[in-house]
Image (cartoon, rainbow, N blue to C red):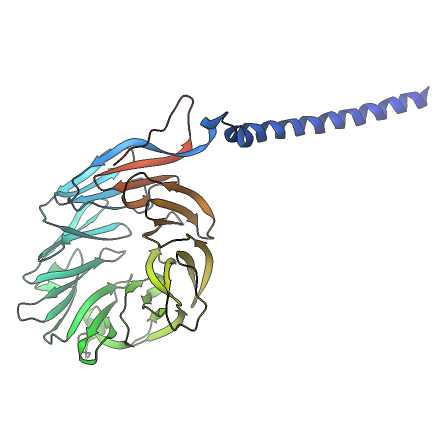
Length: 420
């Protein structure tokens, strides 16, 4: 009798375990059918992830000079000939500031946006999330300008006598009579064309064409403040030559590391912390044309590769290859790569991710090169940028921009393509 009870008890235990296992398997099966199989057969299609327009749109003229910038937030800057608006992703305008420009040129970095005339202008406005921070008006014609991550504006002007000047300004020192930094050249065979200020505001790097020796570029490293510059030639403490090459990209990263891109290499220089120091930390040889380079938060950058460079001894990548790098100490590390398969027309970084575009198709990926989403627009696209996350983006066409979200369709919700 006791033996019969033990057998029955054992059978009951096994039966309960089997039931639990079957129940778990049933739950898994339901999940698979609901989220994986049904969308493929046309049922439950409202559960697929889709990129959907929110209806928050901006309309503008084709030649309005529309430009956009966002710094990993739900707000973005919208610039046209008439002024700047700071807009939330839900369409609410936080503030707007007006001006009148024929053809605005925009340069942005971090929380700051600088706006000036593309040709022949004499005034540059600097904005941050609170509105207009300051403006600079000069007597000479402004040829180019940039703003760094702390709001310091660097400007290149052409003087009335045919020479060139490089100046820097901030919120406190922003007049022609009292700039943060100034250097003027009266020799027209030397043309400055790029000026970048370090994050701590201590150094300025200036790329200069030298037409005395054919194609020849050099980069000046100069002190910004007058105390460091005492006894020097306008703060000059080092110079790097690039014979036969043109510096096509230049930007400071964290800890005063300067990235310089040329057709053959990407270089990284360390400025400071001592006096008169300019040390080459590393170089990345290029076997492909460098078509785009993008930077993110002072720690990461990505490059887009074009055609193979002739006579390069290095291993080359297929056209449309994206490589993503992270700065680590005095070195760099490749975190990931992605092959678009065609020529890149668009490259941006934000939200610890990368957006790469080729014509009307756009791909978002993380820093490992893993695809997050892809989207093909039905209209010519000027710009695509992340807003508060990688599933919210602003897509700008020729005459309209709209905020899009990547989410699952709600019941009875449909997506209608919009031709911009």
